[in-house]
Image (cartoon, rainbow, N blue to C red; front, top):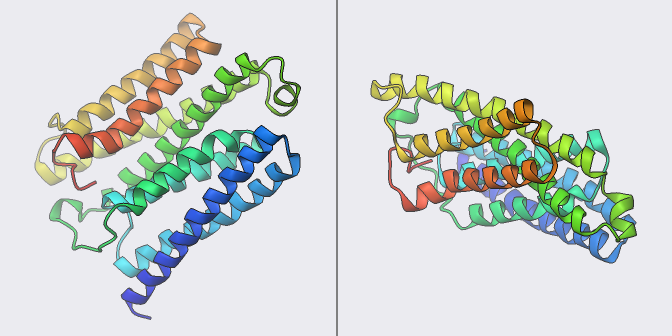
Length: 276
């Protein structure tokens, strides 16, 4: 089977994944708004199927391109969505509350939609990207952003739950505020760990590619800003006991910085990372 055939298969799988994530999002909204419990359970199964096909799409893309599918806007956007899906399913399996999907799936679908608008053309890698560090650096970024995406969704749930105290359905199907706060904290901690690896591996890779560990490229700078925001979150939580609403707001702001680091910097501020 030739590379073009693999890319055609990937294109079909990508379309199916986008439709499955859309279906899951609609079902989760039905669950939360119309209070249809069965819809939430079905949505969970749809997400699993979508994630499996998403994984297959990335693998097929990699085979068709002859390299890791992590080198342009389209590939990273769909991988970013895959990372959030992975982290969501992990947290769903551990904590068992379907309502989380109503807050995570819109983020996933928006990222998939963004990916769909990007060029899917397979181009020859520029010299700086022909490195074994590519897989380590970008894969840790995907896992980091995925965990931050979950913390963002859980924090939004926390903030909305405070305003829905009289809603019996919300009280029954959404964990108590203390548990939501703890889940968000764990997601941030996981994301922060991987983001630290992102910066370290990026610095090592940069030194080998360009002869300098740090060049204050816009993406490097905003990655550092994002790292500092989450480091401040963890510091204030551990040393000052920051929890609940303040911590939730911090987590939301942190993810906004993540999105700007990925989309905003590439779109608005040209730099040596503009291809990624």
